Image (cartoon, rainbow, N blue to C red; front, side, top):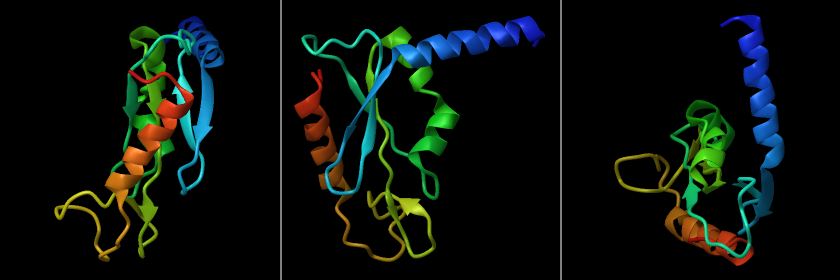
Length: 128
């Protein structure tokens, strides 16, 4: 990529990032960032995407891979990026199904947590 194109791309990302805002919700596991595009208006419902990471990853790692935040301006959605629980190996996981990844029989209720998270976002933002 030519240097001028790289500088233009970085400037565009800086403008997009500065136009977005972030709110935080906490439903018992610490703050979860909820990113809002510049087009967000409390009076108008907007879709919410909750991005879940894979086993041993984290919200920031997953975002660096998928780059959903860069798509918010074009597609008009809110984005919540929570982190799963840390297991005995020190890896984050979601207690979702028998297939993966609750290797230590944790009783954590991630389905309930995610429903509570969506409710908390809807209490502070206008979720469609």
